[in-house]
Image (cartoon, rainbow, N blue to C red; front, side, top):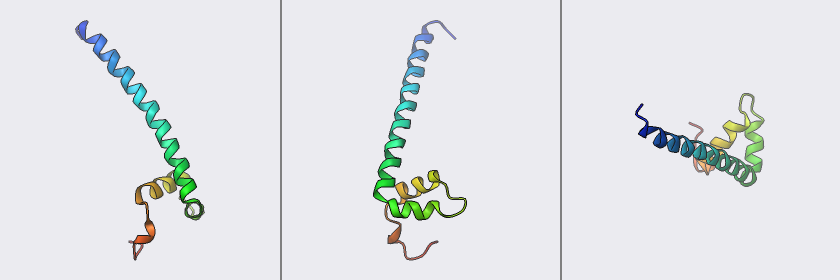
Amino acid sequence: MPPQHHMALASMVREYLFLLSEDKVLRAEIRTATKRMHAQTFERLTSIVEVGETAAYNFLAELFSPERFNRPE
């Protein structure tokens, strides 16, 4: 790699590490908000065998209002 590219690469690595840390913070905030907003549903979901907290958080955060569906499919 040419020497002049080292500084650019180092900058990109710093930015990547920053974005990883921001992603971690935002995911934690989403988990907290989701659990607070959908506490009862979260408890029901995690009571199902093989449904862990991560799956429950993701389901609730992405689906928003699962009750709007008529059928489970």
